[in-house]
Every structure is written in structure tokens, then in C-alpha cells.
Length: 230
Figure 1 (cartoon, rainbow, N blue to C red):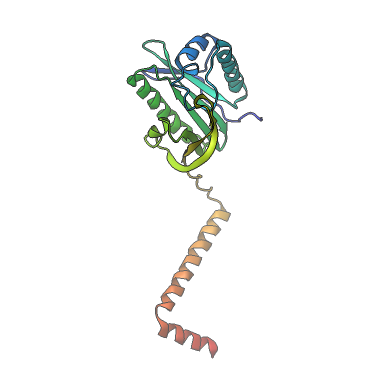
Figure 2 (figure 1 turned 180 degrees about the vertical axis):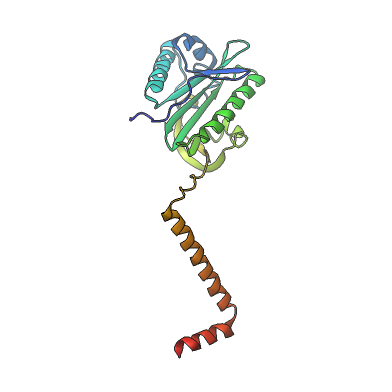
């Protein structure tokens, strides 16, 4: 896979959270709070971790992803307690980016709100970057994540039948919602060619309006056809 030409900031800080790449020292906390937790991984498409070595391999993949720009993961660290409360994952393929979010079920409501607030700011920042025109995500239709998507600014685009496996629920395949947020392409540069096209479009619209006017006045149309015929 070719590396993404777009680079994301490694550290993002707020009053409540520190977003940073996962490190080997996070393995035990990630395992306990998220990747090995049955409730947190219930609707995910990969199996819940049962051994710490799986989480260490997950972190190794994250390091490689940051290196080549194909997989971006941040852990969400609560600044007050130092606990890991969530994780945000991006798979950039400009002009689009797929986003995934994992919020620990072991954290309180305040920590979950802080994670969603950080995600909202990250989404707004991404859509302001010239290479990014579309951000999308998939959610299990019978899970909890989709209830927050429209609050984050996403629009429901489709329901996908039997889209991905749900190994932690013993399902070979499950349905997913596809959510996305987009921004329009920038207006073209002002060049002689674009000015000519705009003038041509305006003239064409004016002529079309004249046709409509004549169609509404049959006598005028008849007179004009008579003159042309003579």
C-alpha cells in the first residue's frame, strides 16, 4: 500500500485529554480498558484480545502505520488521572478518510463526553485540510455508536446488509450503517477559460429564458415564425 501524502499531528492536547500515538508501555492499559474488554469490543469486526501479546502486536501495527501514513491511531489519555479512555483510528486515502472510534465502557460519562468532544474537533480540522473532502465511518445497526453520529455532524448514507463479521457476538456477518460528512470542491481558479465558460453559461441561460417567454406568448411566436418564413 502506498503511503498517504497527508500527515496528521502526532499529539493533540485539550484541557481534559491528550491524544497521542500508542506506545508499548500502554499495552496493559489498552488490554484491560479496551481491547480485552468484552463490552467495549462487542460490535467490533476483530476478535477481542485474550493475551497481552495481541495488544503488543496491535501497537506495533500502529507504529508502522504512523511511519508510512496508512494507519493513524491515537490513544485518549485523561489528563487528570492518566488513564486511557478511548482510541481514534484513521485510514487516510485522500480525498477520503475512514474513521473508527473506541471508547472504553469502563470510563465514566464525563470521560466519554471528553472523547467525543475531541473527535468533533478533529473532524472539523480534517475537513478544513485541502486534501480531505470526505470522512466516513461504519457502525453496527444494533450497537450504541450510531446514536452519536448525527450529533457529530455525520449524515446517514446507507444501510449495508451483511457488511462485516461480528466475531465477539458469534456472528458471521452483521448489518452496518454508513455515515459520512463531506465538503464541496473549491471553486475553480479565475482564468480566461473559466471566465469564458461563465459568460457562455449566462448567455445560454438568457436564450433559454427567451424561449420560455415566447412559448408563453403564442402570438409573438407566430409573428416571428412568419417573418422568418418570408
